[in-house]
Length: 222
Length: 82
Image 1 (cartoon, rainbow over the protein chains, first blue to last red):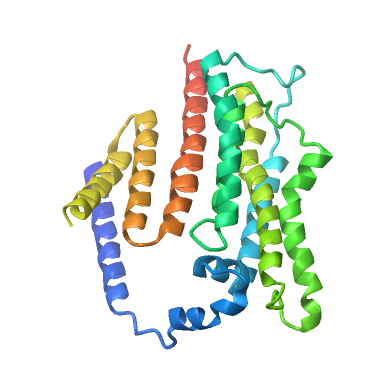
Image 2 (image 1 turned 135 degrees about the horizontal axis):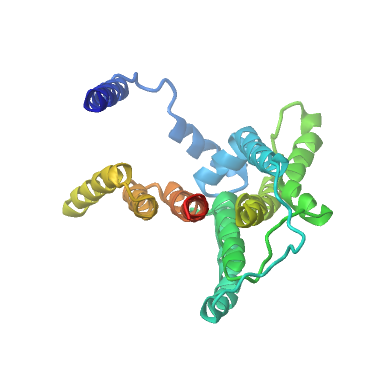
């Protein structure tokens, strides 16, 4: 029975793969040449790197919803019932080598995150990658026993989690008067994008680290 | 060209191994390996942005979360069958 099921699953997966390949080969030629349009409009976007221009300017709406979805995911985690211990902030025994390494690495990681954020304007990089590096630094600090788990996030932490989305929405609302959502005035675009990206990086770092750190304590108690 | 073929072979091999390994911990380590190889593949395809995101989020953060989940499962299993 189990081999029969395996064969059926294999057959279905193979058929699906073939159908996908056929669908990709069968795609019609794109009606508009997007890369050409992008290159033509790049001067107006305020940044030089085409990927950042698409993410933060031409399709800024998508990125706005992305950060909203991530924040919602974190709210879902916060809503989970968690065991809050009496003796919270228990820094578990970590070995001193790991602690020293974390103390050396984390400032470097902050520097790298800042660089990736700044580099996003003219080369590969940007808020999401920089945020992931920040989150990695947070997780490393927790694993080294230097940062307690976020059992009950305080008001400052909650504000930090939301600030990326709030700044993005504030910019969107401020620009609404023009009639189009998230259409930056060309002269201001670079500065606005940098401001949004900086706050996004901060919040993303906290949110991605929060996925780990908020659950970390309940995990230890469960 | 040889490098690309090796990369494809390693990707397929690690993907199969992730799915077939009975040991969860080993599967997670292989998943991280798969993510890093995937990042290399994206870099080879001239998509450095996706490569960065894959390495940071796909391999790094997801790997850390999965490793933690495995450790948690392990602890729970030990408690249930002392």
